Length: 160
Image 1 (cartoon, one colour):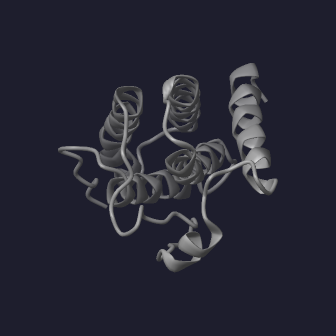
Image 2 (cartoon, rainbow, N blue to C red):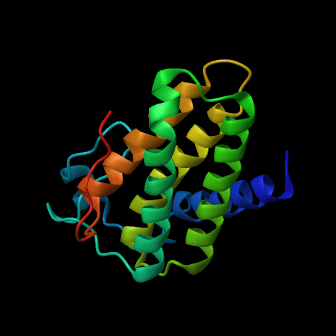
Image 3 (cartoon, helix red, strand yellow):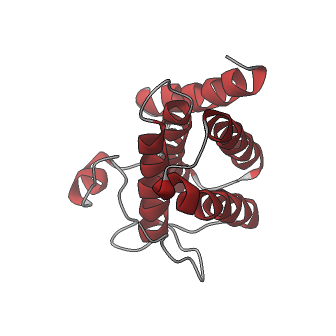
């Protein structure tokens, strides 16, 4: 496991630990249950998308662009193991940048990190010995979740 990969996992794991301890987050439990959740547990902000900041928008746009560029070759079956490994490293680098620079309120940050964990999981699958294309599908689904749950002007889902 690379140093970059360990750093990303550590940052996200520490975040998840902080939200698991009662009182460490401002999320109201009743409101949280009232919001409709999806398979990753991401919910809206009282029915509205969560606010974003410039580092988050830039980072997510870069991740989306990387995936958009890779998808035609992934779908065609011409993406090599080396291509998948390179893509996975890029995803983790972008996640590191987002987690270091994005400054959202705790409630929004909680929702964002659920999406980022999905992207991290997808990047791990990209490097598996088999089924790497399913890692790309995981990341595309996470990007769709982001677009539905965060206020990112001009965001359009990837075709898949």
